[in-house]
Amino acid sequence: MRGVPVRKSKAVTAVGLALLAGFVWFLGTGTTAAAQEEPSAEAMAQANNPLASVYALNFQNFYSPSLYGLPDRSANTFWVRTAIPIGRTLTRASLPLATRPSSATESQAGLGDFNIFTAYLFVSNPTTSLGVGPLLVAPTATDDALGQGKWQAGAAAIAFKATRVVQVGGLITWQGSFAGDDARPSTSLLAVQPFAIWQLGGGTYLRSTGIWGFDLKSGDYVVPVGFGIGQVLRAGNVVYNLYLEPQFSILHDGTGQPKVQLFAGLNLQYPKG
Image (cartoon, rainbow, N blue to C red; front, side, top):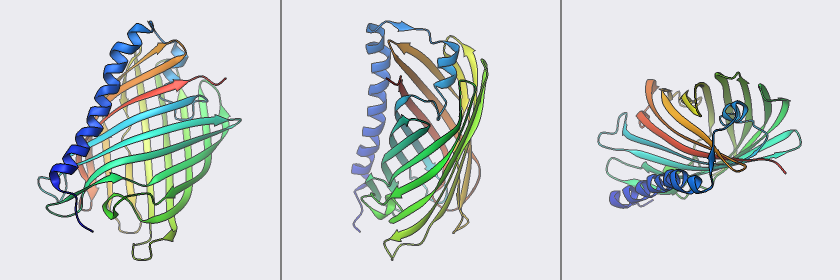
């Protein structure tokens, strides 16, 4: 496939960062007009709970200024995620807009693969959450460099434990290919995301949420560790969660893995009913 010119892919990266900056501006101005309130201890804990039984809309950006084995190259992925609770299930759908190198001199920019999972909540209360369920990935990427080219199925398991000061937990997903482009290699991908949150008071918190990725077919892997800060606030019935977390890869194997990532996001939670 023809590569997207580097200047165009950089423009798409800038769009993702600009969108996130726009959400930051909205948080700082629009919510002031809506009379910000300090969130309750429960709201602060649940703001980072991926199994919180609330409607959610998340905007997240991963910027990697340098990559192993690809000098002077960078990558960016802007995610839009939504979570919908129905009964004792929670469904999360995600779609990325990505910019990634496709060769030593060219990059591709466009949509990545769409993924969705539904977790059945075996335990769901303000202090403890546990869910397990199926996962599906659709090959919606607009270029080979941006996706796997395969239909994939798998499973997701999530656990979350909260106190007034500390929240810990993890998200584990596995996906393997079962159909798709015969010319593309089959997949078996494992992702492990441990997360730890430390409340500082007033809605401010410290966070570490790096996603460890393992390609079980090729043997490639990356293990990032993050240390960041976030702020939770409430305006009306909406809880806003804004955060910034640099992540550093302490273990890796394979070309194109990020040396460092700047992870930034804005999560919005809306009550059911």
